[in-house]
Image (cartoon, rainbow, N blue to C red):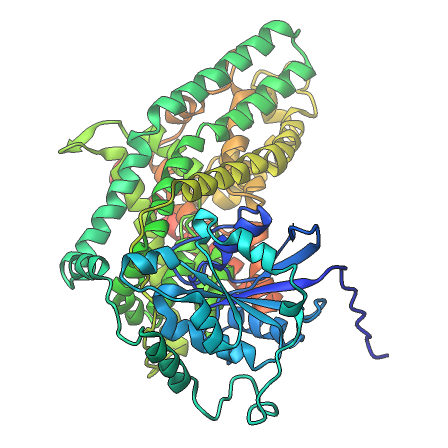
Length: 630
């Protein structure tokens, strides 16, 4: 029987934002709909369509799609295909837009107007948002919006999306019936594909710019001057290494005070609940399960906020594409191009957006390799584990010139993840990529001063994601582990901690047979199981297990000292090595399956990461024992 697809479209006119990458589409989308979608000063931030709603001044409810950036209607990558499919009405479950808003970067008219001409040839009703008009004027590029509209045969509205300029005019324009009418096409292009123009779009745009007096290229002198230093073959890579090094130093140096507040709050909550409730199951659940488990993860929130503060600064300023350019030669040596840098960098937040960002890579083989190595980038879920073990085993002291030893170790762990990813890519290059030559073509945006609003929104989104995980899957798994670690009750006459006689203790000892060669005890072994759902759950799991193992009343919030007393340095180093290549969480596996269309690739990724993690931990543990760290 043949499957029939029934498309059900929601009511209301549908608008689509279309434009080149990094022209301000998402900023305009946020401005019109009140959304808070991620924006950044580089191409490839939006890799899938986003939808919102807003009302025109007359109260007309409108649906708005924010489509991935595209340079033409001939898609070269999966994200550009999303845009073209929507415009052609081929997107599954979505109707063709009733109106297209072409967002144009006023500082890059020559490149942006070609896409406008191609969209116009599709026959869809179209208006133009002349965005970043203020920036263009500061560079001496004054664009007459009415004159440009006459040249294009379209209505042009001047906008500055980051400052709300022009948004009201654009909303008001949508109440005019004539903008919703399809534009008649000239006879010579009516039967041609939209991407084909017998006159040549380049010549057409050149003619428009000449008639508007904008044909002369106006260089951005400030960005050019900065790039002479930032992109210098020798100084550029050194500056990049220095920036990353200082970021990781700040993660530890700046977080001590807020971490102390959270630790004090956790200890106070544990003591208060212990004093208010009689000994029993409820008090154990609250103190040993929830407060110890969740408090053990929450304490690392300041470090996550500090890390993403710097990443957002780099994104907003326009430095990230420069970093990709600097790393292109290194990426090429392992069979990738600098275009893989942005997805891999996004994976430092979470592997899932990094895997999705690989849609911007046109080469299918490079895209697949980038997806497979993205989980090796140190995501924020690993940071609580790293911070816990570094705080417990690495002394807090200054090495030289204000450089903290703990920050140095954290920098080394992030570096180890990058080196591991490059090594895997190099092996895959030997197997799949011989004699392939890759060239990097990447837009370098002008430098911008970071927008405080965007930084604040980005940080708040990261905090919400972290707290949602703490209150969701981490809470659920913490309660589940507490139940496993509390039942059944120890037999009469038992002398050890009750947790040793529980289901968790039994399961942990069974798993310890597998992990004993790499130095893991049964407590670590049992903590790895819920860590498969989310890596940071391993911290709450350790906190719960050790809290139940402790004999004191105030075990909550003192996990690091307990680990320092109970583990050898070799075990701690082995666990750090394990988490450098730790198998990804289940959500990441699902993302790989969705992006590759195959569970086979998800299985390959899970298998090779597990073997790699075990091998790294084994070598680290045995080497540490040989050096006397046991």
